[in-house]
Length: 174
Ligand SMILES: CC(C)(COP(=O)(O)OP(=O)(O)OC[C@H]1O[C@@H](n2cnc3c(N)ncnc32)[C@H](O)[C@@H]1OP(=O)(O)O)[C@@H](O)C(=O)NCCC(=O)NCCS
Image (cartoon, rainbow, N blue to C red; front, top):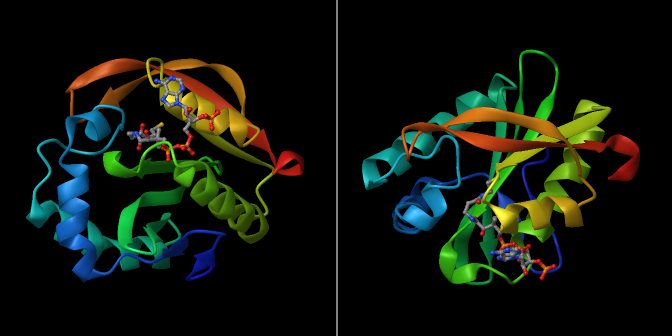
């Protein structure tokens, strides 16, 4: 994955330790954490520092390529690709609530998808959203993803298994 990706309004770059305060402030929001599988709640500054510190190792091991999504004023969210052991690649993203509905998630995810397809040569990219997360369903649909089925996924913030709608995007549709 490239170190930096530029879009019309956003710069996606590796997380830096000085993102921690803003990351923690935006992530420590139930409306964000409840829709994500892996984000704990409450979300502390220590968790932000720890997450940022793990990024380099995850990149080097080819496990996960995460970007800080930044606009002209700084950090607004995260977007990245996970390489699963079964050879599939999964995209995920979140945007801080003050910045919702500006098209940021779609714009950031589109850049990450394009780069991931080139880099991994993946035939398909997978994703999914909790069934009640209509905004994320809209983002993925706008990106060209199609529904493939459903499964239950553990939500760390809610500490329960939730219905998750699974989606897929073919390389040729990116
Ligand atoms: C889902 C999320 C990433 C969307 O970010 P965003 O930057 O607001 O997304 P965009 O502006 O690119 O697109 C949002 C779309 O959803 C639509 N939308 C917003 N709320 C909606 C709702 N309750 N029901 C249906 N559609 C909704 C918007 O109208 C927009 O569609 P449009 O362009 O056709 O008008 C953001 O809400 C978020 O971070 N939520 C918490 C974490 C999360 O859900 N991450 C994804 C996990 S799968």
